[in-house]
Image (cartoon, rainbow, N blue to C red; front, top):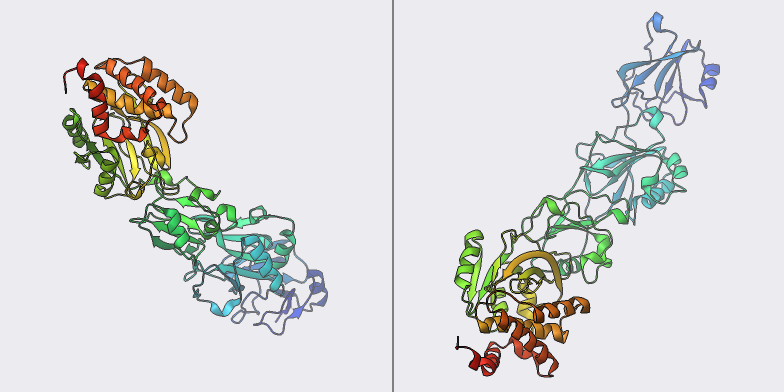
Length: 534
């Protein structure tokens, strides 16, 4: 039998091996024509130490494979010296290194190799600091596995080890498709040395991503919410996991986000509206008015899936073209509903909100005609504060194109709960302008309706009552309204615009412009002698 030596620790299965500090020392101590070098991480309980090579291979060093690599750290060395290494495919079983479990959740993690768990520790802040803390506590171990309670290790082989020349690398195993995973194989001494001067784990050199051995990370906790406000759902939830998926209906398939440091633990909307969104636990303490208060948001997955199609509600009262315009809308968008005959714009908007089965609804006004390019496929953003969305409309009497006469997507809860508002109901609440042409405004169907629309709009413009108005835009629009009109009843458009400016300057209560009876009385009391009552 040949002499047997080891360098670091004695293998449990070879109690009679001798320790040496170097290969040269082994040469000096050996009294046999070959000697063995063994590794404490290998199992030699069934190994044949009487094996020797054929005579013509007697000048080679023979290296024996493990179940994972061509070099297990087991060698048969000729006493006379060697010039080449021959790799032998006979396998020496490699033992699994000890395991440290990082807990991200309050749930227990069942591993097939629980007897190898040396230590458990909580995840704090980032992986770099957590791994440093682990390695400082268990410096007696040359190698360790670091695993996560977020992952499933049922079929994972903890006897894996790197090539000899890769020993001092930090080996990272992906979690699902996420390259920056939650499972690590670490050479403790070199990690402590190399990590001293880096700020984030991504800077560690060298990193080895073992992409051929992915680990299954468990799906995040699912939390269904029912309101129009994702912010409220996040604040009300008690996070027991680092990432939670909030959803309104069927949840989208989640992606696996990196947990290595806070800035990569991003909020991830999984569809256009953000109705299904991954929220990291870190975000909860940063958001106050909307999810966008959190500065790390990954929007790259939003376009993969559409959000819920919001209801379309056609609102009509006394418009001559209402039936025709609704028939055109209904033929193209069968989901469109109609609300007719509710007196007062605010009353009509509230009734439409009650009619809607979705959190928002598109309000289409009877005096407008939807443009062919508008498809009602815009999605409200659940990451924002609940808002109304204003789409552009084109005034067919003077060519102006802005929010007036366009489609508006109303937030149902804001509308129904409203008890106090300014002269312009829509902009009395949070509003987002979407610069997309939605409708053509054919409002000048008779003298009264031409005057009424112009009068109401120019009263609002002149009074500067609309929140977020920009003076230069307002003044330009007023100038166009009061100086240019063409097509049917153009003179009444101009007259209504000028009357609206005067009325806004008069000091009277401008809230009266939302009263249809008051408007009609004012018009006919002034102009009945100039027209036939319509």
